[in-house]
Amino acid sequence: MSEEKSLNFIEEIVENDLQEGKYKSILTRFPPEPNGYLHMGHAKSICLNFGLAQKYGGKTNLRFDDTNPEKEETEYVDSIKEDIKWLGFGWAQELYASDYFEQLYQFAVNLIKKGLAYVDDSTSEEIAQQKGTPTTAGVGNKYRERNVEENLHLFEEMRAGKYKDGEKVLRAKIDMASPNMLLRDPILYRIKHAEHHRTGNTWCIYPMYDFAHGQSDSIENITHSICTLEFVPHRPLYDWLIEKLEIFPSHQYEFARLNMTYTVMSKRKLLKLVNDKIVESWDDPRMPTISGMRRRGYTSKAIRDFCERIGVAKRDNLIDLSLLEFFVREDLNKTAWRRMVVFDPLKVIITNYHEEQEEILEGENNPEEENSGTRNVIFTKEIFIEREDFMEEPPKKFFRLAPGQMVRLKYAYLVRCDNFVKDENGNITEIHCTYIPESKSGNDTSGIKVKGTLHWVSAKYAKPIELRLYDRLFTAEDMDNIEGEYTDYLNPNSLQISTAFAEPALLEDEENKAYQFMRKGYFVKDKMSTPEKPVFNRTVGLKDSWAKEMKK
Image (tube, rainbow, N blue to C red; front, side):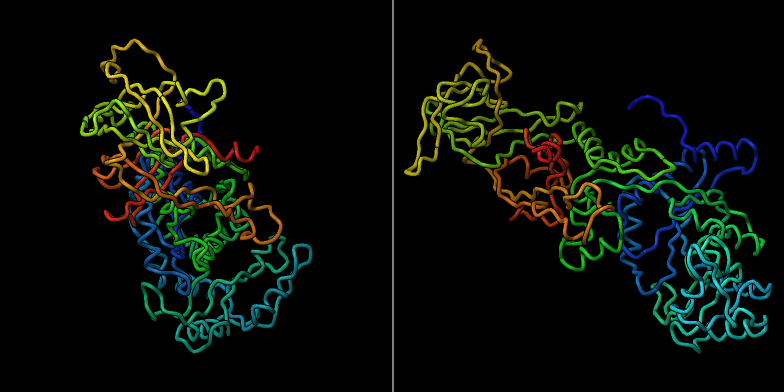
């Protein structure tokens, strides 16, 4: 992973443009529509657009494509800005397509004056029928022959609010027989009597994406307009509009969007999960949204490293979610503080340890992080260990606790199991052990070697916490190629809630700290956690447990 990577095809384009003197510097843009929260697909686009500008000494504009007032909200604008900053990027200018509404309107007027746009009274169904099919040419209608003066007058009346939604549209006059369906007189403006989150009720006509996008790029002098592959058929229209309007020639380039296993990347589908209460919110830790992954404990560095690793491709492919989890583990291993938390407690009584005796032991915060310091760990006569760490009749190579067997308690002593107690149902309720006083960690003079080390917590001082164990939201590997509804593939075990017992130091640390619960996984305190009810989200397990489960 440390080898120097070759340039991706977009970087090659940028380098050639700069070497040939086509541009003095590059200017990219990230153009989200504020109609939902950003997801991992957007993270890839953010890393590409902002990263490209950083690498070649250019800049990136953040431009909100706010041309559909019915679906856009200020909440989404704020969340998008927060996500970009969290990923580690800053924009040159914060802009909005709505900043250009007057200029875009004048562009449309210019096209009408050139005889390249007309007002159409057809219904949406009629327009769709007139466009034909990919194998049959479309046909024009009588409105296509309206003269310039009539079109200007009608377009002015559309702006003035004289007509109802859907009563008229403005269309480009290109080629109804074009093999590219998008060039068969595409709609440039439609009527929407809806309040806009920035312009209020100033406008009742709004430009379509294909009209607003390229022209906004041109207004800002964007040098490299980078889109995903689904916009390849849109590029001829992008170029046609810029050419006919005789404005700065921004250029569109396309790359493969991010497709990940066990994930959906459609805002519409994600919004339905939120609205139908299938998930808690847009930032539910099971969601592939940037805010959801942040709440789950994913790090911005891990996401950036992942995006760099998968690179920029010209063809769509399916990326294994486990690869992202690998980068999360790799980063958290270096930064997360270690804490001992017992998920399924089994009491251990150390019979030769005095009832009133207590010791303050020293535990390292992170062996991988220099200068991370230590914390106090309280050792008492009664402790909890994991129930799975004891077996009455252990198999060969079971190096944990068993009758007559010895293990080390992390940061503490060697202990030997002498006997155990069962209830009337045959369940083991407590284990009796003796400890070796001269075997204290850091000062062991016992000379005894053991292969097993267990994590534990003091029964007296253990703090109850709520665990939220998250897993993949869907059960199908390729959610773009399924039969039936995508909600049919929801994983019933995507969230499991339980109670665990933690060492006190866990609740004494700063907020938003990442932790490795030793031998269990990586966790982070949830935003809804309170002192009365501490809640921790599992970010990712120590190993890829899903692959093992799928093999079963």
